[in-house]
Each structure stands twice: as structure tokens, then as C-alpha cells.
Image (cartoon, rainbow, N blue to C red; front, top):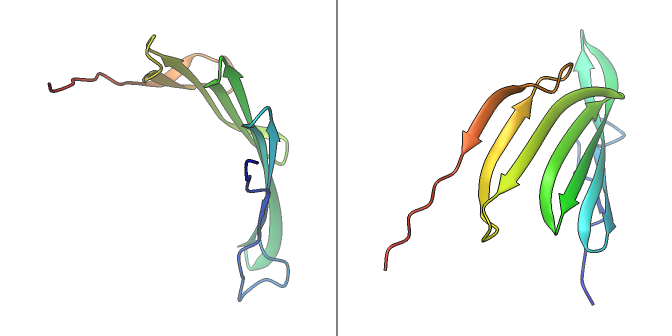
Length: 111
């Protein structure tokens, strides 16, 4: 039987309601993460609601989207070499989906 982390509630000396993160899985893959994050804005307590959505192809992460209060904050796409090692991570513009930053991994193996 596989074990999965479902929920994290860290202790908070400042807030009566601590930050809480929930994890959802499908077919042994993390597909969604929901976080209620407490903070202060101009000395007033506020809670932000973050959601992270993970998409996969053949068991490999292909896309990650993070929203804060239902507004898209982060959009990333991933590609892989045929052996399953990561090839590229593209950070995309939230409005057009055009790449803003592209990180490429190259590997060298010693015998």
C-alpha cells in the first residue's frame, strides 16, 4: 500500500487559523494542491487561496499552473529526453502563453 501526504497544517504563533495545504492524487500522481495562506496586508489579516494544477503525459509532468484567488500566477511547461530526464522548463506569459524564460538541461555521464 502506498502512502500519500494529504494535508499539512504548520503551527502558527501569529494566526489562530494556520496555513493549510491539501494534496489530491489520481493514479498515484499529484494532480492538485490547495493552500490557504494567512498573511498581513497593511496590518490587516488576509487569507490567500492558492491552487496548483499538475498535468502529466506518460507519467511525466508536462504542465504546472498556479492560481492565487482564481487568478493565474505561474504557468510552466516541461519536456523530457527519451530516457525520461528533464529537457526543458518553459515559464510562460500568463496572457499569451509565450515563453518568458526557458531553462534547458544537458547531461554528461562519466564511465
